[in-house]
Image (cartoon, rainbow, N blue to C red; front, top):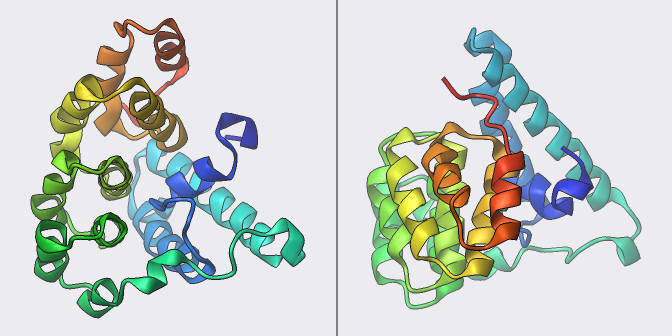
Length: 213
C-alpha cells in the first residue's frame, strides 16, 4: 500500500482510525493491532501480511508526526473533546450506551472507534448499531471499527450499508476495503462489482482480499 492508494487516510484506516486521530491514538491502535496480527500468534499467512501493513502504517504516521509543524496535521486529536468517551475507557457497555444516546456525532464516532480497537469480538454487538447511524461520519467509523476487529459478523451488514449509501460514501467504504483487505468486505465487493457507477466497479475489481478463504 502507498499514498497513491489513499494517502495518509489509508494508513489511518489500517489502524482502525479516522484521519483526525492524534499521536496517542495511533500508538494505542498500533500496540493493539500489532499484538493481534503478530505472526507468532497465527499460522495464517494473511495475518503476517496484515501485521506488515500495521507496522508500515505506524511508521509512516509516526514519521508524519515527527515532521516540522508546517507539515503535520493538528497537534491534538479532536477526539479529546469527548470526555464521556475517555471516561468509558474499555467498558464495552458504556461505549455502546454512548452510541445509543450521545447527541454529538463526533462522540459517537469516537465510541465506535474505541469499540473497534478493543480487540473483543463481543464489541460488535454494540458496534452494529452505528452502521445504521444517521451520520455518515459514524457509519464509516463503524466500518473501520469492524475491520479493526476483523468481525466476520459484519460482512452482510457492511454490504447492506454499501448498497443503501450515496456514491461518495460507497467510495469511502471501498477505500477502507482497499486499505485493510479484510475478509468482511467480500460481500461488499461483490455488490460493488455490479454498481451502477463505472468508477466504483473499476475500484472494486482492482481490490484483492489477501486474507480470503
